[in-house]
Image (cartoon, rainbow, N blue to C red):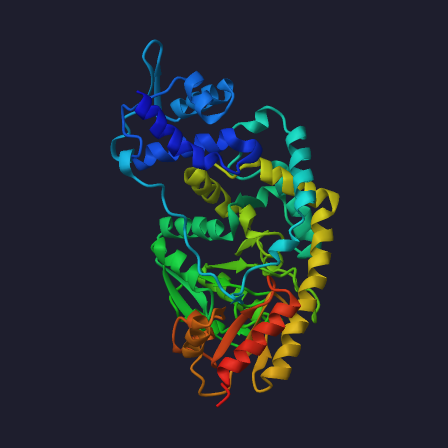
Length: 468
C-alpha cells in the first residue's frame, strides 16, 4: 500500500506546482487524467482522504470533495469499509482525452463573414443576461416554445419594421440557432413537400449549397449580372424556390435592383414558388441608402432569414425566420423535432438588448469601425496593388478584388496560404463556369484592425510581385 501511495503522490504533485490557490482543482484534474490514461488501472485502491491530504499538503475536506466528484463522474468507487478504488471504465481505461479540434493559424485571416469579435459588448451582454434571468419566471425555465421566446419575437418584429422596412408580426417569426439552422429547416420542409431542386445565385456561398445538398436538395446555380440574379434563367430552371442575398449579394456585393425584385416576385407567383431571402449583413452599409427587404413586397412568397452573427458574434447562435402563414406550422414542427427549441436565456437577453437600445448603439459603433477598416483596406490596395480593382464596396464586411485578366485566383490563394494568408479565391464560390465572371479574391476586413490590413496587403503585393 505504501508503494501505491508513493506512486499516486508522484502522479499528482507535479500538477500542484504553481497552481496557487487552485491546488484542489489541479489535483482533481490530474487524478482524473491519470485514471483516463490508464496510469491508474481499474480496481487500484487509493489512500484514505486523510492520508492523501497529508501527502499532498491539502485539507482533508478538499480531498474528500475530489473523491466525491470523481465518484459522481464514474471514475471512482467508494464503499463504506472498503475504501476508494478506481472504477472499471471499459474502453475508457486506456483512451486518451480527445484531442482539441485544430484550426489553421493564419498570419492574416482575411476570410469573409467574420465581424469584429473583440468589439462584442461583453459587459452589456452580461448585464442583459443577468437582467433576463432575474425577470424570468419559473415556468420560463422549462422547455422553451419551439417558435422562440415571445419577448424576443416581439422585439424583433419591431426592429425589422423600423430597420428593414418590413412590417412583421411576432407570430411570423421563428427563432433558430443561426441562419444555418434556418436554412436547414426550410430545406427539410421543401423536401417534405416533394421538392428536390433549389436555385442558388452563382457565385454564392458554397457552404449553403452544401447544406441544401446534405438535406436532399440539388442546388442549381443561376447566373448573375450587375442587377442581380437573372430571372429568365431562373424561370427555365425547373426550380420553385430560390435563395438570394438581395441587399448585398454574397460575394459580388451588388444589390438586387428594383426591376429585378419585381421580376423575381412575378416569377414566384407564376411558378407558385418562394424566395428565400438571406439578409445576412444588410445593416452594414456605408455609401448607399438602406434597401428594404424583398419580403415587405410580398409576405406570402418570401421567407426571410436573419441572425446576429454579423452584428454581434457568431458564437451566440441566434437567428430567425420570418415566414408566410402557410409555412409556419411546418417550420415550427421541424424546429421542435430538431432540438425542442433554442435556449430561452440568450433569447431573453437579446430581447432586453433590443428593448434597451443597446443593440442599436452597438451597431452604430461597429458601423464606424467597419467603415474605417474598409477604407484602410482600399487605401492600401490603391497604393500597393493599383491594378487590382475592388468591387462591391458600398456595404458589408468584405470586398471582392478583381485581379488582372489571366490571373489564376485559385493558384494565388494557394500561394498566399503557404505564407499564412487566408484570402479565398472568387472562383471557389462558383457553381458553374458562369459563376466565374472574373478572377478575384474575396477579402474580409471586419475582424482585422487597419494596421493589420495594411500589413496584409503589403505582404500580398510582395508575394504577387516578387522582387527578382
